[in-house]
Structures are given as structure tokens and as C-alpha cells.
Length: 209
Length: 204
Image 1 (spheres, helix red, strand yellow):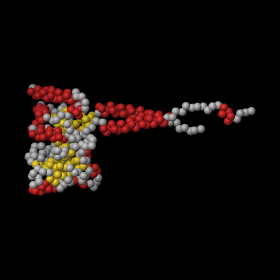
Image 2 (cartoon, chains in turn green, blue):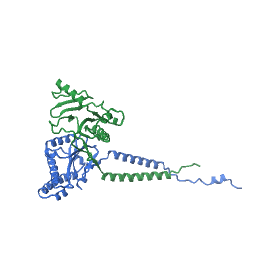
Image 3 (cartoon, one colour):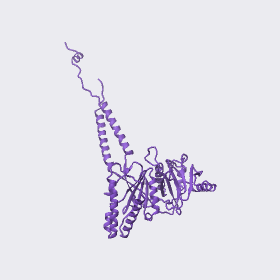
């Protein structure tokens, strides 16, 4: 005589699970359709703090060493490349620069391969983390130029995720941050407010500061 | 002669039990369960999420004028829901000014709410005159509220979608040339492409 295992109870359990899942799915769908997520948006504030600039692109973040960049740009300016509004190499992580009266110095980021990935913020000994740790929240704030280009069907801009992660990291260290979206046609630029009204780099934070 | 037990059993035909195999049934159920779970997970990742921009810690009397910047242009969502109360709190020419602004905004919201198809297709190229008008309206409302000592202040919140920075930069350029925008608080946030805006909450 064969000893058959009864599947009745197992079928019963599975049927119940499927039923509950269907109910959950329907409730979830109805709930999601009515649900609105409220995004808390920090507001720009005037400040006496000085900006530390970063570029976020392709899930990577580059800290702009303005001393190095400006001295390299000055060398180029004296050699004539900068004066003719041509792109010139800034000898800084593949960045190209352009100088004009309206936009000041613009940064064209084409090759980002040697920029640190934003997930290096989670590694204790990473250079990116070190750079952000060195920002003095009492005197400085971080300002990000964030690339908004989205390729290969991504739902997010190429620098959005990196910026969000860095902003959270800095918030944990009580360092304020601000940002502006950029793209290859209107790239990151550092200019002087005296020459152009829109040249402002402000930190954004919620009301409690 | 007594029949042996074996002979007696052999005389009766074996009882035929109807045995239904439950394996195909189980298999179908498990497949359904798997597909449902998969759809559920997929739904949570890709389904559009309705969003509303706020500055939570500053809300109360501060009201957001939302502008969503997309690759094809902008969608402006002006606040209308507290303007009735503000109008009741003031008198004379200020009341007329608020009525004008409210009318303009209600018309804009009517167009947004009565569209056919996805709301994100309503993006239009930012028009310089419209931007200037919006800035002037915000400034006017803020000044009227301040004069009447009424707790109401509008500020601008930009939602920047992927490839949407061009329209945003155009608006900021225009804003840098008008004095109306100088006193307006501004916030901006990067948004993912699957986040869609909620229009009903702004009018109800």
C-alpha cells in the first residue's frame, strides 16, 4: 500500500496566501493612487559662509580645488588660450575650462573616469570622505553643480543620486549645502556677482538652519 | 471448506479511489503568487509617485508656488487655497488686486486640471512675460499680507526633473533682472522622472 502525503492542507495554505496577496495588492494600488508624498525642500538663504565647490556627474563627485584651478587658468590666460574664449585644459581631473566676462570661468566635464564614485563616502579612508570631513561648517558650506542629463532610460539625472547622498552625509556633519542643475550646454561656472546678477552660490536648508 | 483469506480478497474487485493530483493546481497557484509578488515589487519601483513640494519646517503661513522644470519646459502650480482668506482680511484696492491674481491663478489651475492625458505633457516653454507676471503677483501678495499684518508669505519651489535644467536656468536668469524676485525665498530639489505632481491638493 502506497503512503501518499496529503496535499490538502498545503494547498489550503497556498490558496490563502494567494488570496491575501491579491487583497494586499488591491489595497496597495488604491492606497498608492491617493497617496501624495510631501517632499521637504530646503530654501536658499543668504550667508557669510564661503562655498566649497563640487561637481556631481555620472554618479561621481569631484571636489574643485579652486586654488589649483585658478592658478592653472591664470597660466592659460597669460598664454592666450583663455583670452580667445577657447576651451583649454585645466590639468585637473580632465576638466576643460573657458573664460568669458559673463560666465566667469566655466568647467566642461567630459571624462569623469578618474573621479571618485559617490559610494566612496561610505568608506572610512576614502579621499572624497576626507575632503567632505575637512569642510568647516562654521565657515564654509558645500556647493554642488549637479548634472541633470539622463541617459540609457535612467529615471534620475546623472548627478542627482550622488548629490542627494553627499547632501545627507554633510547634513549629518552639520555642514550646509546648496546646488544648481547644470548640463553640457550650460556647464558649471564660477563667476562674480559684480559682473552678473545671477552669480550667486547659496546654501539651502530648512527653517531651523 | 473454508476459503483462505487470499482467495476471499481476490473475489472482490479492488475499490477504485478517485485520486486527483494536486500538483498542477499547486503549481498554478505558486506561479500566480510569484507573478503577483513580482508585479508588486515592480510597481513599487516604477509606478509614478505623486508628489507635492513643501518646506515642512517653514510651513504654516508660508505657501509654495511650485514650478516643475522638465525637458519640454515648465509646469507652474500656483497656490490658490488660502487666497480667499487673505482677501477677506484686507480692504479696498488690495482686495481688487487679490481678486485679479486669484482669477488668473484659478484659470491656470483649471487648464491644468482639465487636461486629457498625463499631466507631465502640459509642460510649456517658459515665457518671459509669464515669469515676470508670476514674480509680480507673488511680491504683491506678500506685500499686501505684510501691510495687513496677516500671516501669509509665498515662496518659490522648483522641482528639477532629469534634463530639465534649461527651463530652470532661463527662469533664474529672468529673475536676476527683476526687482520683484529679489525678496522671494527660493528652494529647489532634483526629482526623478517617475515622480508626478499632484494637482488636486493645491486647489482643495
